[in-house]
Image (tube, rainbow over all chains, first blue to last red; front, side):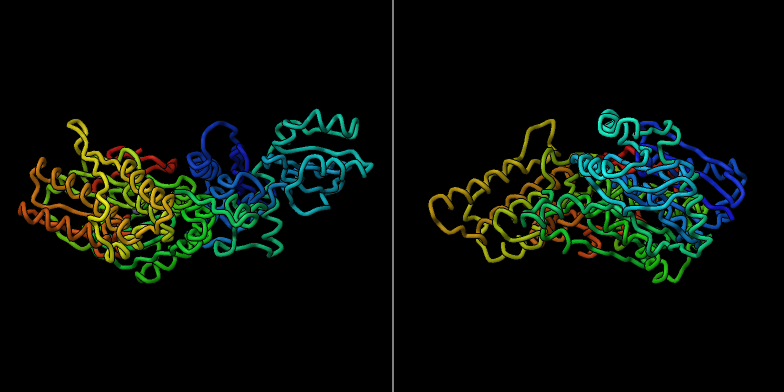
Length: 237
Length: 339
Ligand SMILES: [Zn+2]
């Protein structure tokens, strides 16, 4: 079973090909160039490197959110078009779950956080040790609310994700020795993990199709929020 | 050999896909408009537009193929608008189209949205070239010189607002709703276009083919505010008629001048504002006096659609000007710059 994994939720652009047995190929770029230019050429070179034609794929897994709205759309749109053209099952994977799933052996809480701007992080809590157990839904929270929640707990907390760099000192100040940090290469989302999670979902027949896969933005568009709050229009022109 | 092109268009607030044979015959032309969603915001909200495109685009493509009675395998190539437009909206179409092309092993062509508007004419008329074309819509006001199908030379564009944008703004100030073009066109019929003689900006020598609508827009808004400050009711129909007459005069003057300077017998009109009744009549009359002929698409092909993208894509396909897998959206794209 060949599963292609895609992640463009953050500044990282990552593509991987996995089977039940192994990671066949992975390409992970973190450079200042748009995902729109990079993603498809990376997919083509991962498949070419593995000697696999697009028609030989069995499914696509994509980090479907949370993350940058535009980044998510590029990944999801690409997955949907592959699914439509090749009649493949698709699988939208939580970006936060994929980040946590890179640390299944960590004995304690795993706390992925992605920069959500406006004073918030995208976050969910998982419990590690032997595989990961989800403790909360994916959500947008303020750092202080999250720290208050973590303060109630006793376990060590492993922080991963792009917002960790922004808040590292605050996390250490609040949690002391309980705050743990993953090395950079496993603190960013990797498509290999997205693909592996997708493979498990597809094996459990929990896949989606190009018809129903959409990004999990968590937040509504700014104009909609504003409209809801004030009845004010935020339209262009 | 097949001659079917799938066109994909997501540059603004219409998600569209179409199949066109030989750059001429429309086999299907599917459009999902988001206009009612953006209406309550008084304009297109880019983030909402992008989300709606993502939800719709694959279904619209499937429907376009089904109505044309063909499959992906029957296509000669896939054409997509890669600019100009809203970047987030364009990205949905561009990434969808290039991924389809890659997965299916089909050539991809990247279409300039303004040239797609021009190509709407080729779907319904046989044009003798050379010709001059005025493209007017919510996003663009451009004059082009056409040597042949798909060979366009840029003559001039607006320095500030697009004509359609000015219509939207004035409609908003007059509280007529969105989009402004059709409502102003309608209400202006009941007004006196000479009641308010608004200024016409016909600029100097080096920029004869450039347009400017910001001065006109300010003049109209000032007039409305002055009336309101004096406690008078704004004669909406007269203001709309006066504004529209000024816009039309500017567009007609520049287009006639371009046809004269370039010595073309045929003039094309394209873009959403081409559906404006006063513009069409005035331009036709002015050109007829100089024995020139006006061509324009039917209203359904004036506004954004994907049949025009497929028609423009056909010309690129014929010249084998293919796009790569790294094709990106280009929100500000000039005529003649393909990458
Ligand atoms: Zn347009």
